[in-house]
Length: 291
Length: 323
Image (cartoon, rainbow over all chains, first blue to last red; front, side, top):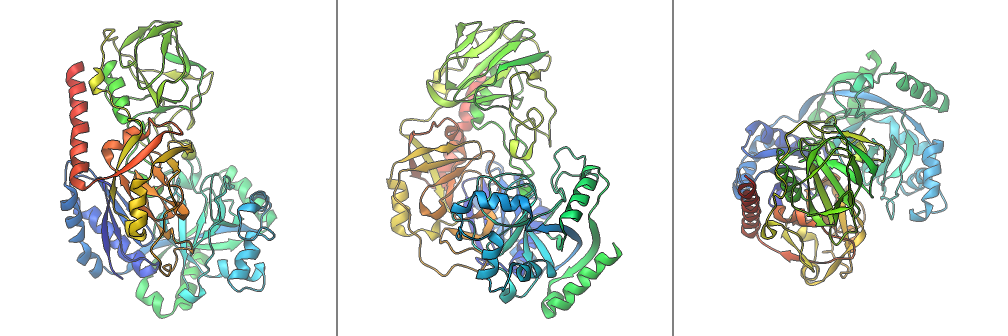
């Protein structure tokens, strides 16, 4: 893992912890972006953590770009020493896999897909060596996920699965992006899952849909009253498969503002996790039983 | 006191200087694409420079005034009329209650900025009135203006008519336009030949050019340095592990058509970026029409900072001129 520092024009410093994705790179990026925030460097206006990198936006009239880069660089040792541990929360997100709405959409954009004759799920299952879409869906929701980045548009979470690299699902993005994706589609691209927070363009494969609102600009949904965006980096997510009847029920409860997601506070320790991933995940998911 | 929208034009949105601070959640800064023009329009009518006004692209709206107000139109060149009588751009004028402000056909540039004394006072979201339709923030209920809207306006005294920004202090793109680029970010992904080609070729603005980003076409495809793709990046050589995008950053999906992200940028994604347009030239992009020829010019950080200082000096001179 070799950190790379570069400029994005005259107003951004971009720091990449590693070219490839890993939880180690994510933790270092999160620690370092926190260290930059705490350092309170004059002129810094935005700090954006991403999967294995982060970006600092600043006013070069306040701190010159070369000084800004150097001051950020000086914080790397702090990040290296930081404990790879988080106090965070696990959230259960209901997912209706193989739903009619993403199905209608994926059929509409079939000519932009690698496999024009199948569905996104059939394709993803096949290229990842699963016998059926059902077995693939099981792999997608059996183990929890880590929110490693929030962005693209309006509070969209990118999630990375808490499993050994050889068990990671990998799928390419659409050959050409779609111009439409249903709101709250559960998507997949590279080694990341995502939830499309709003309807719009998208290039990720579509596996299902959640009835859970995750972005509410009017802040009327009960669990989004304090802030319009639900997810933040470091959140842990457990997908729970649901059927049409349950989807309809939850959706009507969300609309009536009587539904809230199951959430439990948990500790996540990267070293402990690395020793026994499945055992560690089981404990994380147990926390949801009391939620 | 309201502005009655009679016709809305193509995509007329309320904009101010944006909502910095939420890009880490995928909510872009937004605000006027051509910031200098928006600031100048506000100065002309005696508003704070960051007051909210209207940004109209390619086609002007038609607006009926319910009160007397000072108005200024800056940015692109487009005939301005009050009850059919011509008015000057970049110059303050009065519109009386009951009169209608309208526009002719676009002559040059792409976006006009309309400031009204008192500023537009719709409800701000996250500290700004700027319209961000994807996230349903700002504007009129999170959207562009529509016929029938009544836009609330603040109470403010009228200013003298005929206050004007001297022509030398107005700034628009040349033809072909030159956009200065500071290379960096994932520049190393391109071969030396591809890097040279990017600056040698003449590009044209594609039809897909909006507040989120401008796409360019017409240059030769860019080749990438061969490598085994890093885990999590995706198979295409233009893919990276999804990271943050800088405002003004230039991505080239598949190595074919560069996209420059602008004020309503997506905050991140999985395409390599070769560098970014310098901050001083961001305003110019907002005035580019589709099919305009563009040359990207390779500059260093010192040049970028000198250009930034020059733009600031221009704004200062406009302030002094209108003080």
